[in-house]
Length: 232
Image (cartoon, rainbow, N blue to C red; front, top):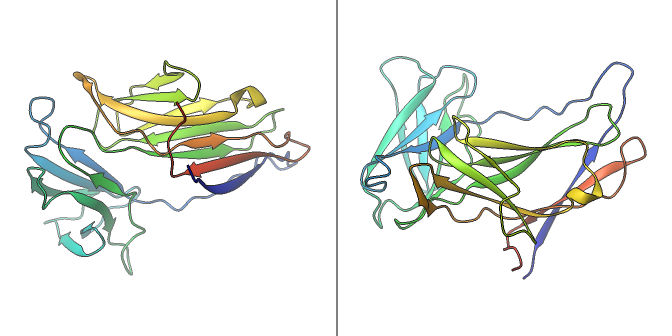
């Protein structure tokens, strides 16, 4: 399988003034509300939440062609978009934005709604920290699309998950502290509903962690592999 590789250099530098940090532009959160586990795809509502401010308008985009915006009766942090049943006309790629002072915000992560019977594929990415330690601390984040999901972290070569989380929201954080070459490998994330463990999501895109150097003498070299599947 052909992989497209993106390289992220994570510098672990001890600064006399303290730790370095990377500012990431905030984006709204998009998630699904449905009457699961009884009939999870018969009554779907999408919610869009502003990360840090109240807003007067919210925008839902489908396949980058169809747009619906809502102006709540009062400024709020979040707004809902009712979709109804998951049918051929409602499947697709969704993102949302909220209104800032002079324009729309950065879009949310992409939610892909497909045919009923399987949860949407979670989004998988890394968040690096740079404390003054012998190794780097790396957080691997997995974003599901429903509240109260079970998040499973799998590593290539292992039949059982290497970690799991049951967060209260839609994002699980898997932490690798003081990363070493033993942590190298290809990882994926999957989710399932707590009350219906047989209903699993598609696997996330794989994330490949490769160590290229040590902190204080270079950097950790993390390669994100997108798209593709894990080898069996």
